[in-house]
Length: 424
Image (cartoon, rainbow, N blue to C red; front, top):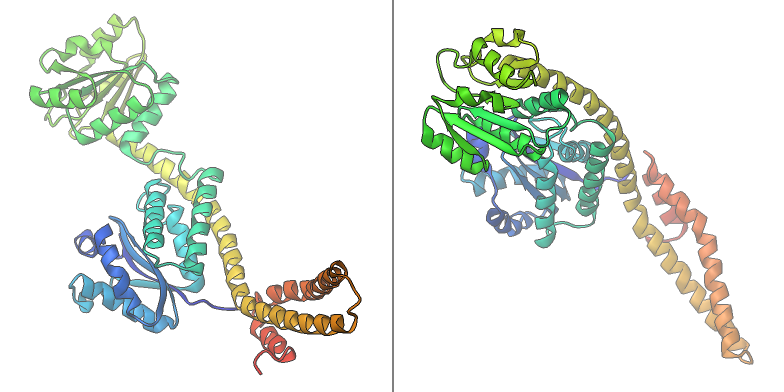
């Protein structure tokens, strides 16, 4: 099979700590500066730089893989003014089939820190779009990246890799949906202004929650967060009296003792006429007395409960990732088959050009001998001869493309070029 010498050199969150990754990051401006630098290496034909918070990778088509890999590593070190010795243990490199598979996995979020996250596909698209604008890609990388995007879309549509929540905040929303079915018009109370509680509230708002109350020991923080969430701030000393208003209560304070106790919740559920309340205790130490969970129509989940949900969901995503990898393996084979036809194309063009030259010479020689024909008749003869050539070469062309995808494809190419005297 033909090789187009695809390579990938990079670092990611699995091989390199963040303090080094951040030194290697390429902003848009740095990528623009990099184009000419990379093309100064004679072995690099086309390239694309992908730079995110979790990875820096350079995909390239090269004349010589060994030389190009060495050149790209040297370029990264020189461009960021870092020692090759410092980075050598962090670099990974892939060639041909492995490079293709890696990009397909990255675009489909199978190589992400959070399996199934959606952000990476947009980042890969942005990297490719910039490379196209800078004219650093060509036939092979264009085809590779376009194929990666269609595969990523299919993986998300046909597997459940992105369906289950794998963050604490989104797991809380998933549980809330199971309790209330419809979250629209539900009321949420945040007790404390922790980051995870804020994220959970934002998720809930995206699912239709309309009313948000925020309380904190520091009232100004409650006011600021309430403003961000388009909600209302409550005084910390009196929020207990408003507990009955909430369908969902999220706590994330740094209090050393329980701030919500059983009797407080009993009073609230009575005032609600036994309508359920969902408590999410994200705090460590916990904010809510565990006995609260013994009450009827009260659902209490702490950070460990949420982590169990996250872990179970991650296992489900991992199962879906196996299905995705089976699909990706098939697509890698298809792409490699396409690569295999690239060597055949110049040969096919040469054969057709040679046949066309012979056809034109012979038809014009013949037409001179039968000058009594009208121009329409001559046109018909030219069309007929062209059609004959096309039909004669059609099946051999298809066969040649098929054969060049096999391991001994180069043998067929050599034989064809010899038979048609293409290298004379």
